[in-house]
Amino acid sequence: MRLTRLQRGCLITVLVMGWLMLVSCGEAGNLLDLALNPPQRKPIDKSLVGVNNFFVDTEFGKVTQQYADIHDTLHLKYVRVLCAWTTDVQSSPAVSPTYGFFDSILANIPAGVDVLVVLSHTPDWMTNSGNWISGDPRLTWVEKWVRPTVARYAAVPGIVGFEIWNEEDTVTVPSDAALALTQPENYMEVLKLSSQVIRTTAQGKMVVSGATQSIQQNFPAHLNYNKKLRDLGAEGYIDAWAVHYYGKSFESVITSNGVADFLNSVVVPVWITESGENGPTDQLAYVETAWPFLKEKVPSIARIYYYQYGDTSPAAENYGLRTTDPQFPVSDLYVWLRDN
Image (cartoon, rainbow, N blue to C red; front, side, top):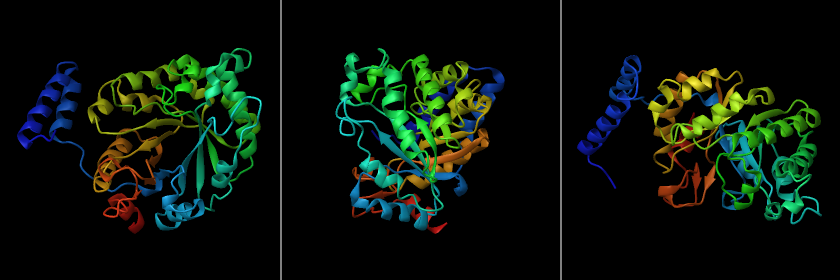
């Protein structure tokens, strides 16, 4: 439903008043100032910017062509890719994983690009506890997926590191529920074991924590999951703390004990491994508003990976820098990155 300007103004007023009733006088002043003077568009720092690309949509070219577009046309040097452990990759615990598709991505990293590899998901047979090592699904995930995958790609110079899972506080693939990662303590088990494997098998490669769902949304649930990981000692096993950031909810960033306070308490660099906006004409305005605001509030942000390079969804739902819509083959952010 589209709101009129007056309706939007009334809604903002109601939301602000709700926040003001919950916070201290000093914080109320900050929130009121935010409401009256919302973040303005500013040029983004392109040196921080990377892009998610999973190379599954051949509509945007071969793997080498997509890399060339990212590096040579958009002048980006950070790419985040997904190595998903699926039934297609490993049909049963009795056979070895098949790496052909991942090999095609990781063997073709061009000079000047570094790739962050996300290790995530489970094959269907992981729902059967009889297939678990020592009755532990999380140990099984590490031994059956993390260890062989890290060993296979440990010597690839273009890989900067490995991110352990993606949005562990939710279940996106039904078989993933077997690992029970929605409980922070269980994710910590996976993180510790995976970190030990990477530190010993791929020395020099970074260990990056898995990012929860957008850290400021559903406030404070996703933030609290992150806080619990910190309190359990996650920083001792990683080289960068990953977060996702979609939408705005800027008040959740600046409120006391909110997103900025938490991220500024983290001692390792912060990487925003996913952030973006749908609609090919709305992306530039979003990143020029949200990203400079976040960097100002959290100086330790060292990378921001836009989500995503290509998207075949309808234009109104599309997050891609490139689309298959003939009216919007590239987004306004693509144009900016190309020309700057």
